[in-house]
Each structure stands twice: as structure tokens, then as C-alpha cells.
Amino acid sequence: MTEKNLINRTVKPGADYVRRNSGILIGLLVMVIIVSLISDNFLKTSNILNVFRQISTNAFLAFGMTFVILTGGIDLSVGSVLAFSGVFTAYALANWQLPLWVVIGVALFLSVAVGIFNGAVSAITGIAPFVVTLSTQTIFQGVAKLISNGMPIRVTEQTLVQIGTGYVGPIALPIIYTIVIMFICFLLLNKTKFGRNVYAIGGNRMAAKFAGIKMIRTEVIVYAISGFLSGAAGIVLAGRLSAGSPNTGDGYELDAIAAVVLGGASFTGGVGTIGGTLLGVIVIGVLNNGLNMLNVSSFWQYVAKGIVIFLAVLADVIRKKNQEKKKIKIQLEKKG
View 1 (cartoon, rainbow, N blue to C red):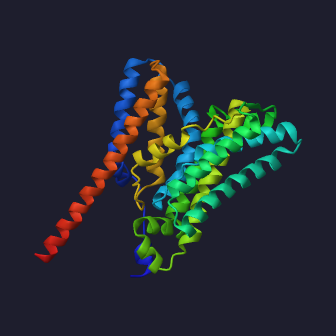
View 2: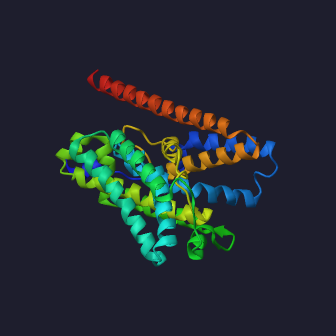
């Protein structure tokens, strides 16, 4: 089997996209109808734009997480890297008197370095990504709190504030960033050899190795992308909140994972799309916004999101079992 045959993946537009994501689209539509019937403000243009502005942070993390999960991995460090990046940026601007572009560059470099560490350790040593990224999650939670003494650091640099709060016409800049990043990630996954390699590794690691795919390099790049997008999310969020807080990213990895799985990705790897992840991000965002508008307690919101994650994973398991049954049925028919 040639590498080309093994890793050839294409994304069909239009009707096929709707078919593949019909379940989540129906769920999103039902959710929108229910919330809009209860709250008159939900479908107002200002609130819709606010929802998309709010989901931009999760979109950054979820797009990076998509690459990781496609290889069959997981990155639990994204929330901590986000917090570290925001805190580092705020601290450096407040204490080191460096130009903004230098501070942002260093913050992104450090975030990518965390991703490279995650990918390299996991790929070279064979330690489960869950364990490696759980370790870096804890480490950088601590580092962010050490830098800030556990307190938010105020951002006074107005250019950074504009990066997080600015508008182009009626559209908030974070929405524009999200669209650009989504487009770039889509091209990487669907129009490059690297993207095909990512799918191949997740689909069948042994076959991918025999096909000559450079496993370690691909996985390191995947985690580096996740680290970069986490760091970028932290910088934008620090600008939007006018502060870098060590507690900002708590639980963000769960929202990112939920969005990816809701979007149709499989935890075992090889299945998933950026378009599906976007839908998952929107579902999580609409759920959060709707519950807030209905004045639902934040404690119950955790319960609701936990149920959504469980159902998403359950759907993934059922989908996998159905696929296996179909394969067995086809094999039996061929033998018969």
C-alpha cells in the first residue's frame, strides 16, 4: 500500500458537510429555538455578535485540540498555557518596559516550546499524552501563579487592549482572528501533506509508520500548533479583560475537548474536521450564553456541560461500534 493511498483524504463541501454534521446542526437548531422562545434578547444582533466574540477563545483552543485529537492524542495543558501566556504578557509589559511585539513574540515562543515538549516527550518516550500534558498543565498553573502571586496583573498597554477589544465595523477583532485561524487550520489539514499525515497517524499508526510518515516530527508539530494557539488565545484574552489572570484558563481544556468531540472527532484519532469543531464551539457558546441569559447558576452550568461532554463521548463510542459492525457485515458478505 502506497503512502498516497493510505493518507489520501478529501473534504467534500456543501451537502456532504451538512450530512456529516446533521446531528449537531439539529441539536444546535433545537437549542437556539428553545432559548429564543424563553428569552427575547437571545436572537438580537448584539447578542449574536457577543456570542461569537465570547467563543473566540474556545475556538483558538479547540482548533489546536483538533490536530492533537486527530492523531489520537490529548492536550490537557491548553488552559494553563493560555493563563501563563496572558500572565507573562501582562507581567512583562508592566515590569520590563519592552516593546509589545517583543513581549508577544516571547510569549508565543514559550507557548510553542511547551507544545514541542508535550509532543516530543510523548512521541519519543511513548508516555501517554494524557500523562505528559497533565504534568505540564499542573506545572504552568503553578508558574502562572508564581509570576502573578496568584493575583490578576492589570494591562495598561492600550494597543494590547485594542487587540482584544477592538472592532472592524460591527465585527469584534477576536471574531476576525477566529475566522482567519479557522481558514489556515482548514488548509493545513485538508490541502497539505502534513494534514494527510495527521489523519493517517490517527487512522492507523502502524500503517502510517510503514508508509514512511515521520511520526515524531508530525506529532511534535501538532502539539506545537496547539501550544501556539493556546498562547495566542491567552494574549487576546488578556487584552479583552485588560488583565492577565492565573485563574483565567481553569477548565478551558474541557470546553475545547467537548467542542472537538461534539464536532464529530473521534478520541481514537483519524476522524474529525475543523468545520465540525467550529460547530462544536458554537454549541458550547450558545449553551453558555443561553444558560447565562436564563440566570442559571454557574454550578448548574458545569453540570450541563458535563452532560454534553458525556453524550458526545457516548455518541463517539456508538458511532465506532456501528462502523465496526458494518465492516464485519461487509467482510462476511464478501466471504459468502
